[in-house]
Length: 421
Image (cartoon, rainbow, N blue to C red; front, side, top):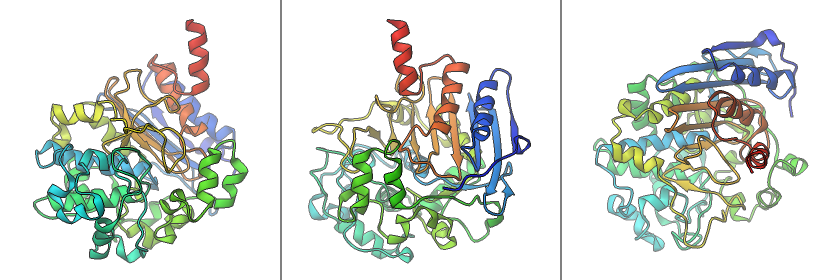
């Protein structure tokens, strides 16, 4: 893994009075040699209270990370993309408890006739992998992709189990959006016109040709074999399954094959494709702005009270428990988002928070109870599925030191419980 020394003078930004612990944690990440380049932005009640960036946009050429740097955020894209589906719900065009096939008749094939939108968005549909081999050219709303999605047979009985739909979730969302939207737009264009434009977000799902590529951070990643060297960070069962090309875990992340290598996200053709679950690229501040809007009621997105209540509500547990068939440990999902669970505590103690984490350490989420929209992203990939030490240090500083909310890390939570007993 690339490691560089970042001078303290290359760490920039500002925080409102009282938010100094977040800035201290951000600087500490660089001082400890954990970062190449990164940014962290926080909104509270619709107002930006933290705006931090620093290091190198490219650790090889040593080009600096600027305030307007855009960065690929891998699965943090999922939560951003799912806001487009929530907009359709707010407009009364989509019912989370309706069958997917009611909007998209071809989806009913191969035993999927009764799968609901809620089950699909909550990773319960049994569709984390596609049997039909895809090419990069197939990914942007093509008939080939639509057919592959529709013909896929579930890996388990929908609703009984769940498993992280690492790549496929975004494609299923995109095809569903195109069937519901009166203009027939797929998710990338719908997001650009109905979510990004109203909020003036600098974030893209499928990078347009007009984008200034000199602003994009270069991702410094790892190879599959390196995961085994960090078995203390990445769950052993997941790492072993990912290394087996025939496992459901590996198949969920490697079709098309180009997506199986994290650093391929730097390729212009990968960045231009529409992969709503994986290849969102934009400013970290735009992710925080979006979640901040949702945390503050979602008026700028046209959210209704029922839409926000749906996003805040507890996840529906699969009938056979929380064991994730892809990530190989217990998880919890709802409506395109991760919800807090014992091994991943985020936001306030109410459990109404919702967001998604990305490969390597990025994370964005909304916490309606505190009005917080939080986003962190970096270009040096770590090995944790969640709670990357760099990110969780920032979140802990915000929620514990600044807001006086619950501990965000399992170790501090245990210490807090001992003190309270």
